Image 1 (cartoon, rainbow over the protein chains, first blue to last red):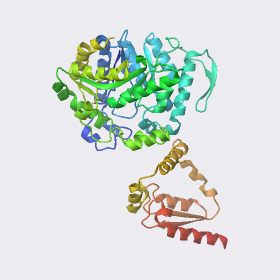
Image 2: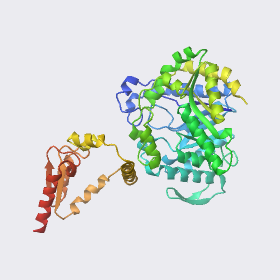
Image 3: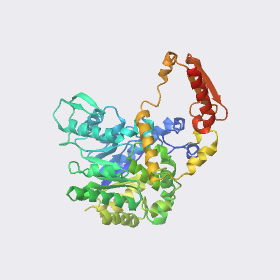
Image 4: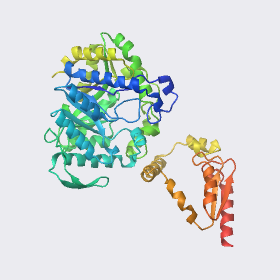
Length: 379
Length: 118
């Protein structure tokens, strides 16, 4: 199994009581609540913890992109990736991912990834996402064209990475007379592309397409939903006439390991609650701007109303539903193995720092995971 | 929804409805189309104000005095910039006068049109 150590880089010094007075920690939370002195320290500590994953033997470090939010301090994940390249030697760096529809010229993303791939001598994994709904408020990008822009930007980037330049690209959203990448990517034909997603059926069908066969990562969902999305991908692959491999199915999940179940819950319970209840809290309108999904998906979403932040979640409920794996090494391993039996997934993106979890516990969590869980996951 | 109306019973009635599948489709299609046309650039172009003086035709400006979407100060501006405009400010009315005070709005429109014919 491929193991990715991932942090969202939350702004942990956030005054949660003050933040709770505002509609959401996304888009509208006044940035006077960000203290640059504390923030700079956060960057240093988060990068230390991310880089530490190499020593522990993880296969990759994961970073990602979110805008105008205390939930994550990485509006430009490639900057963090660049810092990590200088701090590490062998480990892969997975940017999970860059939000393609939000930019007006996707060539810049192609160039940045190509630079990182050269800087790291081929250690980059390129994640492509649409950005969550809130990003369409903070960037002003029209959600109605989100899918179209994503697909077109993707096509442009892949062509820029693989076709001899210069060539012209004429799309509905992006038109360029000259596409001619300097540098070209280090990996041939290009860095692996992964698709992190909340599991929309359109994205599953697109990622599983035999032309792409992109690994599909399900993020922050209950174990049942993760299994359902993985198996939807498998069914889709069969429908296309092939069998999906373990390397095509990923699961991103908050994980905390301590010596006993009880101790793990005591140490990480509050932190995982802050991740879901404080840092992820968003209204339906923020998460689902009109046109961001198809009408069919939107109707399903309205029916289920299981929107993130749709009610206070307890650590117990999050553990119970398998949304977070928190417990002794044995408990955590059992949770992972259960999912492996259900879906045969082969990429685990372990969120080993989440919410307000402090540095010492994060470090201990990473150590214990590496010592007592990781060896059992090596095939 | 609540910001659309002065009289909250309108909002209450709409919020209490459980839309049918077909109504849901229409509502979502409306919302999607509004986003498609109005999200970027954001909804309206404030620069267009400079052209109001070119509208020489008689105009009737009807506004709710409790409009929380487009505050009533806008109405005064329209009245001022349009060369031949009459302003009707409706008492205890929100953003949708034709819904909230339909008979009154209809009377003002008919009066206005009648004036145009004479």
